[in-house]
Image (cartoon, rainbow, N blue to C red; front, side):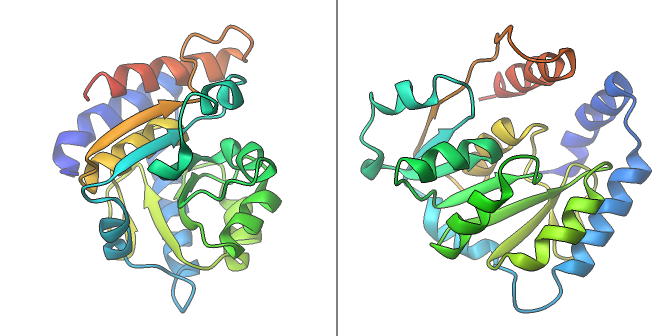
Length: 207
């Protein structure tokens, strides 16, 4: 991801939601410090896992389990968006990669991580407490930000957990990307979530 190309989109998101870039950057610095040591993974791991492969991106819409009946999960590299991890684990499916801001069922994410999932943990302005609490409990972690990347903190593009999964798969040259468990027009969500889904839909129009 070329940050200079992403930055105008990021600025528009900050303005639309009233988010603080400084808060995002401070959270990223915190995550960077938490990832100094043996718990980190190299992005080459993602390249080896995803490049040239068919990727199944799992969102957390209520229709996830219905959508999964239409695919053979064994044919894909599975990337789960945060809250999708719990229903996948409950179904006996361990995602290869979990993209999360630690807003979902973190205990299920810890379980998945112990069973082999690579964690792509995202820092933003209002999850610093969760970073402090949970990041030390994970291994094989790659840190991300929606602000400018630096050192061991990356920006692969995307805004919500779901669309960040797709940007991640694209960044590491997936052969194909299939979405399950996505409902960009879900009316049974909060106003904030609805707005975020609108941005996710807009951003994924890039692909």
